[in-house]
Image 1: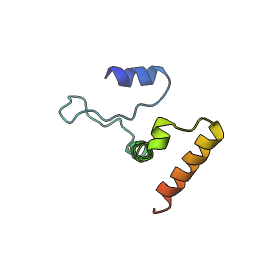
Image 2: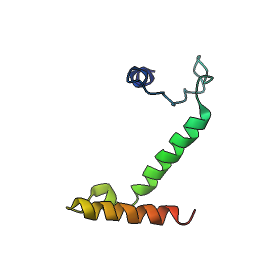
Image 3: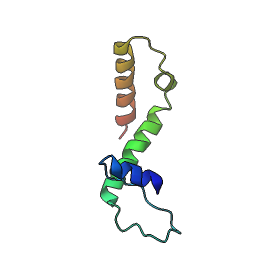
Image 4: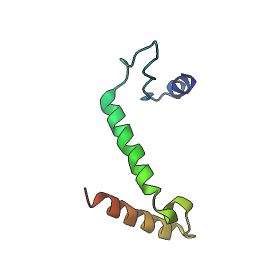
Length: 79
């Protein structure tokens, strides 16, 4: 609950569902926004499978960005 309050203080909308046994329900959660949040989280999890990107082996910014673009293509092409 503290994290949810901290996010609200920053002016953002917290989209973190509460536990199932919580006395306060999840009626105030925007589930459509939660689906997008979930997609973004899963994408970054997939991106971390590429070791060179996760540990940033490239010294130059342009090389890192091109490796990142290549990983984006590899991830999104099969979809």
